[in-house]
Image 1 (cartoon, rainbow, N blue to C red):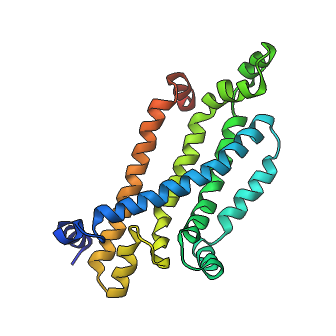
Image 2 (cartoon, rainbow, N blue to C red):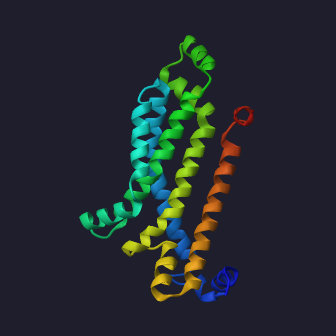
Length: 225
């Protein structure tokens, strides 16, 4: 039996589309974990990246933090949080947020530092406040890189949120964990396929957001050789 047969059998089974263990329920749980972790990571990383990038200070410290965050083993952090706090959603959110903060933080900082200084100097010469320069001049120009960081963080969360199943929570990881335990490889392959599909949908969503949120002039500038 090949992978395509496993996928077809899993998705074609009507019992997998209903009930508490149905695909719609598990996909909804997975999306919930992803959105919550991404929102927390963005709330931490975006302000820090914007401010440090605006003033051009702290780049080395951010690089060190990002390197440390990437070096932490996600599953090991999950086990540690579970030992400290017991079972719960916080245990899952912590490693997912730690995973997503570095790409958002670094790309936000780099995006702010890559802004052409000429319009920034002109805005400052016209008496615009630092907050006005940040949000009205620098942020729109840095938005493509900022969105790329959010996209990277979201993809990593979608791919890693399967760890929720290891602490008795839901999401698409339930199919993988339960399938391995039951030796039901149809369920394992089906769950992994749904995770991959959700990652592709995430890419499409960020592409659409970029087309809407980024001005055509800035978009052409980022595509120029």
